[in-house]
Length: 119
Image (cartoon, rainbow, N blue to C red; front, side, top):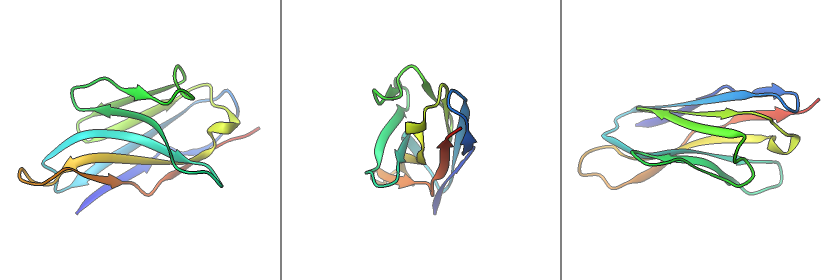
């Protein structure tokens, strides 16, 4: 089994900061990429940021310059600065990984963590 577990969500005022963490655990041979998506009420899930192994991070235009993604082994982080009410959403961690050397690449998702930006 593979699990992705997010933490660090919460309530923050506009202009504030939060740091999300996600830990991948279980039977994992290699992780090709990790990233963050979010889903606001009544909207579709959207890409926020991603970081491939050995590659450069990429961001949605709406968060460029405010969010920073980083990764260490099986952990991925999202530092969110200058938060806006429109950043309010459930944030999901995802990872593309192989469970064994002969496995195909599969995508896994965490359960999500709520981020609310409000005064």
